[in-house]
Length: 249
Image (tube, rainbow, N blue to C red; front, side, top):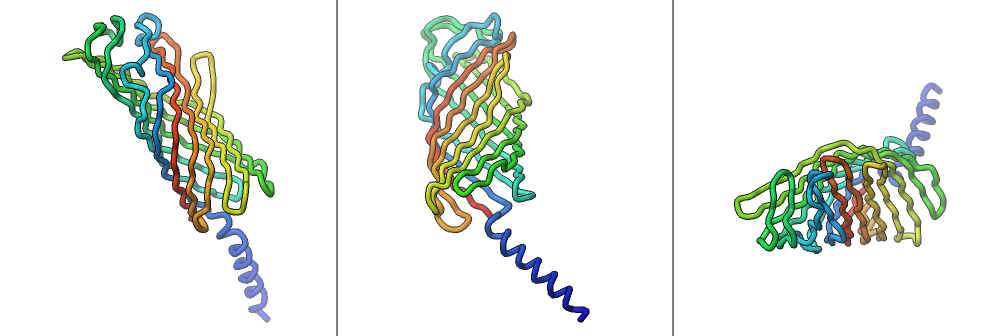
């Protein structure tokens, strides 16, 4: 008689694990790679007295290789924490069509000039499942973003660079549409705007289930944003074609 409650408790626990374990898969990693094209990259350093010019006329429009890595954990059925490492670097050589005052140096026109643009992003996102429907899921949350950026010009022995590291809070929105049993369409957006600047990272991907817990994704990503202040004026827009592999466990 004393063992009966224990047996009932064990059966209930096993039933709960069977119902929640395989479906939820609380951990996931995603590796994304692709190509980026520069649609706009305007720069002035300092922002108020430097020469405003198109950096992408030196680096070229692309394509440039890109990649990023996600790691996520769901502590409950509706909450998720997601970490992201997203480096971005483009470089090239061209000629300025006018003299450019940049970061305290003057670069001559018509001379081969090397340019590098780096914008590395490290983020931590908390998001909550606000709608769990038969076909649609919606998540809302907040993202803490740490940017590590650098712009450099080099012309012969003359080199000047501007670095910037800072914290940016972003809003997060995500939606999943289950198109078919093995196919889904996913929208993922981090973004914020203020008088001093803005930041938008938005992707739309189609996901195909290869097997339980393993998905292949193909899609489009847009990165746009910048800042306008006394220290720097910089606004960039990149379009990306991306391929992802996601493993949930």
